[in-house]
Length: 107
Length: 123
Image (cartoon, rainbow over all chains, first blue to last red; front, side, top):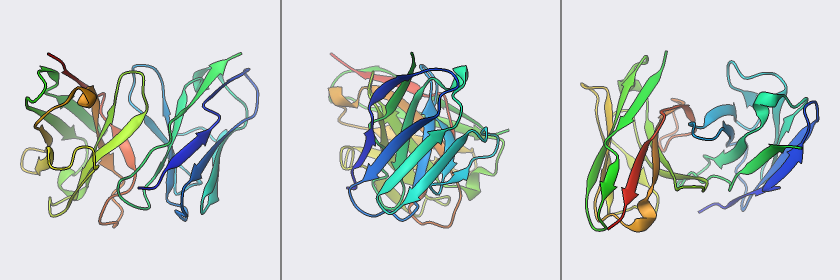
C-alpha cells in the first residue's frame, strides 16, 4: 500500500496567515491526490482533487500543487472557519490511503 | 442536492455482525461508484471499501478483507456494508461517500459524504 505522510501533524496560526501543509507519497502517484477538510464532529469535505483542481464552491484562498510524490495545500489568508483538520488522500491505487491529518489550531 | 444518510450503527460484541446502510438521493445513484470510509475515535480517516456503479467490481482494505462485504441496491438507491467477525479495532464512525464518477475502475475521490454512523465493538 502507498503510504501518505503529512507534515506537520499540527500547528498554530493566526487569522490572515498564509499556511502550507505538505503531503508526501511513498511512491509516485502522478496527480492522483485529493485534499479534505474536517471539522470536529462533521464529515470530511472535499477541497481539491487532481492535486490542484478546486472543488466547486470552495473559496479561492485554497490551492493545491505538486505531482509525483510531493504535494502541498496552501491557504493564502487563513479565515476563522478554516481552523480544522486537513487530510490528503491518494487514489492512484487501491487501497486509497489517507495521510494522518494536519490539525490547524488558533494561535 | 446530494444527500447521503447512513444508518445501522450501534453497539455489538466482538465476533458479532452488523449491516450498515447508506440511503442516497439528489443524484443518479446507479451511475456512480461508492465508498465506505471509517474513523476511529480521535484518529484519522481510513478507506474501507469501494463498489463500482453497477456492483461489478469491489475493493477492500486489507484490514477488513474477508470480513466485510460492500454491496448496493440500485433500485433502492442504497449502499450497504455487511460487517462480520467484528473486532474492537473496528470501532469507528463509518462514512459513505459518493465517488467522483470518473471512468477509473477502482474509484477515485469522494466528492460528497454522509454524516456517518457510529459502530462500537465492545463486550
